[in-house]
Image (cartoon, rainbow, N blue to C red; front, side):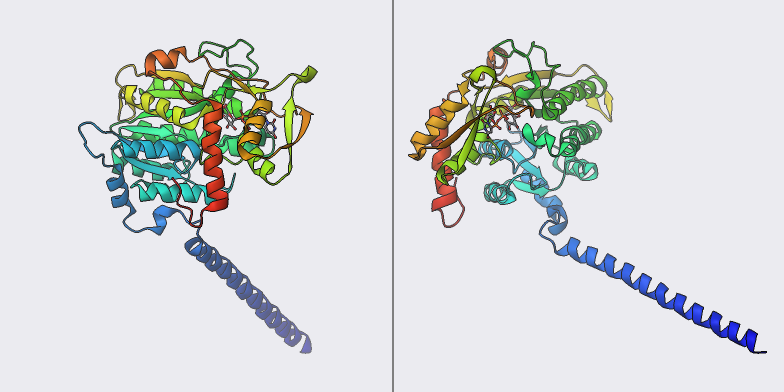
Length: 412
Ligand SMILES: O=C(O)[C@H]1O[C@H](OP(=O)(O)OP(=O)(O)OC[C@H]2O[C@@H](n3ccc(=O)[nH]c3=O)[C@H](O)[C@@H]2O)[C@H](O)[C@@H](O)[C@@H]1O
């Protein structure tokens, strides 16, 4: 008689224990969900388009050109980035409607990107905080804005960082570009695309100066390979869907509001802090050189590419005729040795650098770059006018003001 009683009590005990742990389990799941929701809705990282109600009317307003008969309406990806910021401001200043997109990632100090975005917003450019891989959002933006052009400058930049974080290059430069092209493909009317390729596509090419006709099948870094892949992807979308596409191969762009990961910027920071800087050199003490190009010249090239871009020929995802496909070098056609760059900075900063010369690491770097600008000059009227000395002077002036002298960051 005792045995079944005991078994019954034992089963009751086990069931209550099970119910207890099940309740705890459900409670923990609920707690996790609540915490995630709280984080999502309270975090400053929350996408801007969710943060602001009525953001779609802000997009429409920002996309509206001053004079619809002669101005353009442009979506700029990477608008809070270095080149994106300068291009967006220049477009807005001439009366074009401009909307920016940027994910404000942490590749370098996001507060610099926030400060650029503040200036854009003060100048009437609405910046949507979103990743270019959010194709749903891109499609929505294109349908609200009715953009004539997309200037696609969002990318994972930097040649050497690709060894640390290869996935970020695939995410932004391959998947992100496809997401942008897919959204353009579906838009009606299809905007024309102008996008940033890179001088790095020339890789190990040794024929100088680098011409658009030269081989680009020897990339020296994953970064270069993703930019080269981008050019091939652009070809396919132009061929199949009739999207008008212009790729711009930028040559080591520098200037005020620049990228802290680049040598001229990090050298300035370290020279001022009396920290040692590394200067790379090639085999047999060969100097490394770059065709450093000032950002204002690059902006002029971007605007000229926009103004000469023909309309896309696709509609409803189908091509109705051949569309324009172009690639241009945007450089300075005046390479300067990195040693010389350092000596200019020393003079401008009035501080002698603590230099250490090291063999160039095998991390994707190339010995030199040098742009042939004949094509850009003939077809875009592109003519760079800023030498490295003048450009660095402007950069140093901005750097000292931004990091040392201003109380409220409102420089421009
Ligand atoms: O134009 C391009 O194609 C590329 O230009 C730059 O890449 P890079 O030319 O390597 O520019 P920096 O990283 O500023 O390096 C400039 C030079 O300084 C040298 N360097 C860099 C860092 C350092 O500590 N020491 C040093 O000597 C590099 O070897 C290179 O020759 C950009 O970072 C890329 O995003 C861009 O696509």
